[in-house]
Length: 495
Ligand code: NAI
Ligand code: MG
Image (tube, rainbow, N blue to C red):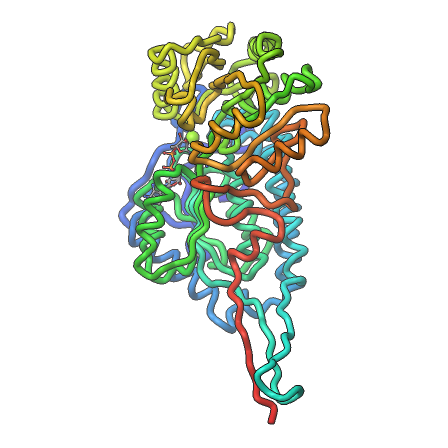
């Protein structure tokens, strides 16, 4: 595949895609394919290979060969490795427009947001991580069990080996970059499995990886579904798996990785509390809280989906949020004016509709966006529920759609009491003008990220990940490198 005029003319080429195994673009060994749809039109965009166990095995072998001592990848100096990763970040930026459109067509998300958030952040991940290659250091550590000077003991940090990376459909390219950049910075080789709903941007990234000059087999991209992912998790020659997706599958992966005790990192779901105190700058709190739930159609692990509002300002905040919701431009993601696109799939739409029905059945009051939804496409009505209570599914469970529940509260202790039962701990937010209250609240939250007077603010340099059942380990920042490195201790008797 190459950049064809066809691709540039239509935004997306309809040529059936292949997957990247050992530097070769390949079909599945048994020829199986899966279709990827445009969720705004429900039309098939193209097909990608449906990788089976044999394809996964081939990709793992390629990654292993690329990891062997003396391979072209292992012979690169840290500085050379960093330059390749940096070049990849540059290539992502050079193709930003095309990648944003690919993301929008394959996932449904607004192209304007993909161009503003997904693509620059993906590039940033490569740029940030590229600088770490030359700064992965061990220590010289004194040895106390022998006379001074008679022993030399030190540590080195080594890449963990062949890594399986399984990513979801909500931020397809960004998730690929979150996963690939640190693995490559650490010197690992990778088999990446994009989500079946959104494989296209990762495959395009594969072309850019080749263009950047990475040796064959360093990054392999196997497209497929859950069974493809499961084959990667079960493979005995994979040293580590990094997964982002549902909590349910995360738990399955924990069980399935027991065979060779591969190392795991998991970035799972969330039901993140967002706390608005009466003394907050309310227009700002309302705008940010609307963004916290409606950005990316609510298909975000860190969506601020459970909004606590201090009682004196409850009506005012709800009114403001409903107004924000009604202002959202709902439509086809590829239209630059769109702010809320369709959900990724019929399955996800059915799931979200199920929650809307259950909320009403449980007695909560829905306030639904006034927009008329397009007749085709997987559009869900943006919705704010009041009168909801813990114990209702809409309050307790991750919805992963543009659906907010509002809960009134009197003091922080009320929030803490409800949050104790929250199985998740990915993000939390607080809006107040009182600095002390802001930090007391941040301190009380059992969450990997706490936003103060903002939301959706992430950075490649800042660790991100979950407490409780939101996952294991941290992504981004230098913290993520730990997941891709082993420590070797060398103890030498100098006598
Ligand atoms: P999922 O967890 O099934 O899919 C995520 C990835 O895991 C995909 O690449 C999929 O092919 C792969 N996968 C599925 N089963 C697997 C298995 N047994 N072994 C290895 N890999 C496997 O998520 P799904 O079904 O697309 O969405 C369900 C719910 O999960 C959503 O409604 C949402 O609540 C949550 N979710 C959370 C995400 C996050 O960012 N934390 C992202 C996507 C979904
Ligand atoms: Mg698609």
